Length: 185
Image 1 (cartoon, rainbow, N blue to C red):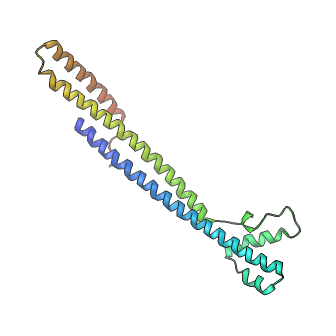
Image 2 (cartoon, helix red, strand yellow; image 1 turned 60 degrees about the horizontal axis):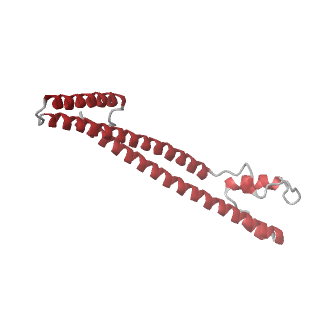
Image 3 (cartoon, helix red, strand yellow; image 1 turned 45 degrees about the vertical axis):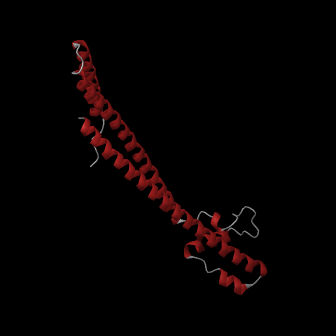
């Protein structure tokens, strides 16, 4: 049982490490997607700035060049322009503040981050299971030790006491092992 408990502890330890590594990779991908979304938002904002500079200068040709927005952004821009921001004080500050402004990369980053959170929780749980198996393995080693040294004592009472302690610890270990999940595949 001590060997099996040690084996299960090693398997759960590997499971924990692999799951936490997966969580770390998902967090890295979420950060990349979030940075890509911020870069795209900055690009959209710069495009609006260029359009706005041309608009305030009254330069129609520059406005036509600057207004070549991404199709997804054009929807938000047109919706923002429909709010009459020149005269409407309640209009949003710009197209990126409109409900029509979508950032699929940011949604993907959030999904990856949620996946990372779940994987991290599973990895931590697997680590706790590892710790429980290690504790049980140590207790089983104490059982082996106490029963093994019991034969070296000349007094029968001491031998019986060590075997009784070993039997009690074995019973506790069996109960703990029965409550733990088996090793992962």
